[in-house]
Length: 205
Image 1: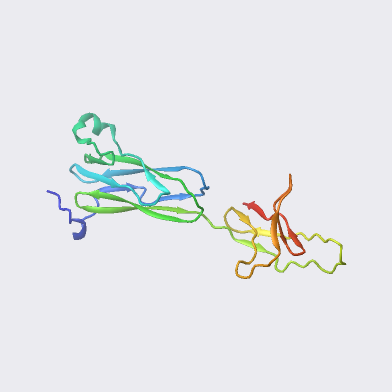
Image 2: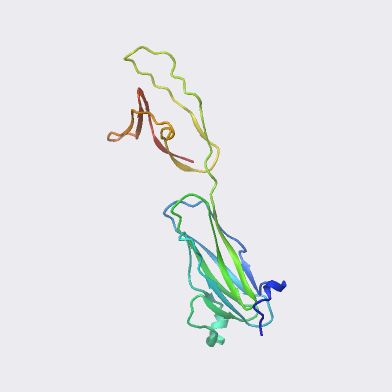
């Protein structure tokens, strides 16, 4: 009989995970991304396998699928639980991990893989290179006469990942007279006192 405490005694997991870390990169909010995972029985006897769903709402898993040889020759090994199976030596079970991000922040979760010798974790990660903006500071508009307008171009450089941006005022000490405005076929403007900054929202690679 299998020993559920085998993991605590140093026994290795009876399944090889491929990949051993599920990593999503270069994703966008609202997208749906998938990675297939294989659990291959690397022992000499049939092994039970059960997968527990992840906790994060961003990750989800589909039901396990098995090597066709296993299903055709041993249909009695396929039970009613869509996330559980008995896998013959050398054969594998497969599932699909889905990732539906609602934020561009990093996510960390795991799948718990239950075996006859203990439970093992398969990490689920999302990693996106964060933007890194460099803006000319300060912006010097020079001298001007009352009633005149001066337009000063400001160079913004992004040395990190792509992203969407919006200009805001200092939340710790906000000015009294600021607002956003937009007109047909124009960009969003941020108006602070006598200054107007446009575009106040933009996307950069």
